[in-house]
Length: 402
Image (cartoon, rainbow, N blue to C red):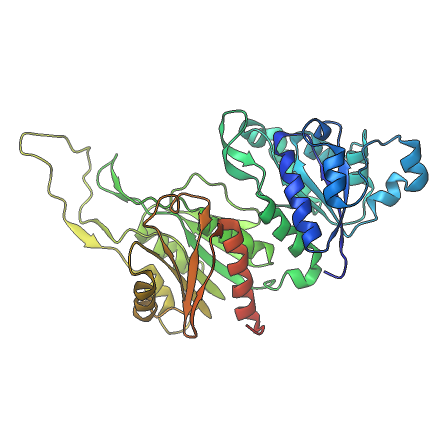
């Protein structure tokens, strides 16, 4: 990165401990880190820990005579290539959106002329509050970049969106931001991503569906958007929020997903991550089925359309790159090769879902199957898998050497 420099603002919250791992990742990549620790942040991590990992002093006080004599806050705000706020608390976001400057962190954010990347972390109710949504929209309008937040269990005991993104995901977002124009190789490219399950109705209350959470597909959509692509995410029912900068089209059934996918064309690439139900009932019952003395009803199943094969079919409008996913429970490599040939797509991303914790979990180990052979990737966070796959897609679409 040619000795890039990051000014890291650590806000107050339980998630501040993750900032230590982020600093370690940055220093391992030979990126200089200058930490700024808020008074609330110091309740969760110590200046000594940050200084030791960053190999630099920690700045805390706006009115420190020593700091102002050695490096004034204006110079500090402009001393790095990128300003990163992790965790970005609701308070820090509100101050930045309103242009307040009553402490060192908020003053630096107001005075900087460098790009700013925020990684929000807060209680789910705070994240969903109208004031936070207004502040988020304002900051995005001002050009602030965001990574996360993630969904999951929180220290307060609640569950939902608001968890700080994992350090690896923030690190990748920092690399993309530091790369500048070179970090947006997909600018001008249109990409379609399908994600999540489909839900095929049986009656007004019952559906045929599967265990897909949509996490991997949403992570891929977010990673492609960070590389500059105009992403349309056609999503089945999930509990996930639409990634920043991504246009989401919500669907339920396979027929709806096919129609929405075709409507998103033309596209340079189509990445079919969705776990589409293979079958639907021939006739949906208009009222809720009741248990009776004659036993369970007979359901006649018919085959759903093959969305991947339809998008991969040769002809006008076919995306340059069509990628399918294969969730297998046995003979993963063999089945992936067969699916590649059968569907007519360019790559298959296969994984073994026989074990627990893959479908609906946060980590994944995949293999990439294409005409050149098989490439095995190690177990990693789904955001890391997404970032690596997005880079591979960018290389393919831009003609970069493999």
